[in-house]
Length: 267
Image (cartoon, rainbow, N blue to C red; front, side, top):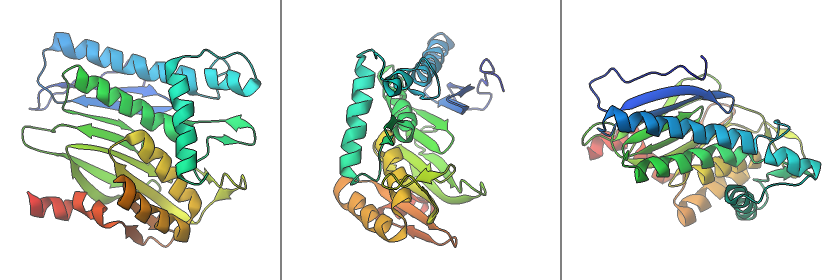
């Protein structure tokens, strides 16, 4: 798939959808708000322009990105978004006791936060522009707002990042969903890859924070991760599903409130 390929919605739903390759993977933006094409097309153009700018700015593998310049000790631009991301990463590091840490071995890499942050910012921008019913998906990061159809919540399959099978179905009108487990996770205290858990999924109001929390819990391992997940649910309204190496699931009670069985009973 090239970055110019566009998939316009051909279903009975209003709105439009587009998929492009950004940040190393396909990203889809599905808008269900009934808007004329003259408004939808520029919205989608702007959405992917934003994501490409984020990639150009924050990807440490790009020699001219601001993060690469920072790691070389060069001069960086004091752009508001860069300051915001670095500040928020420092806050999340403190909140997780250093288990989410964007700076390891003297190298800054905010990848565990930046994708969720970018999609969260995009979701807010779409809502402010009048497209309040949308779903944005980038791999295991998903942000939904509004309705998939009048009166209907979004139905999101939480997939196992290894097998691709759906472990839980989540129904929501306004939620960020982040799963850690598809790529190696490093213990920031030792610099070693950890393999104590199969995957961690975190649901919450801010996708960037959910992304960071999922990474942190995964790095913590089973015992510490379960304790921190319980704290997240109590104090910060983020719910967690931990998948152990043997395939067993450990979920916080609030996670089940969003799952398929609970949603069907409620609806």
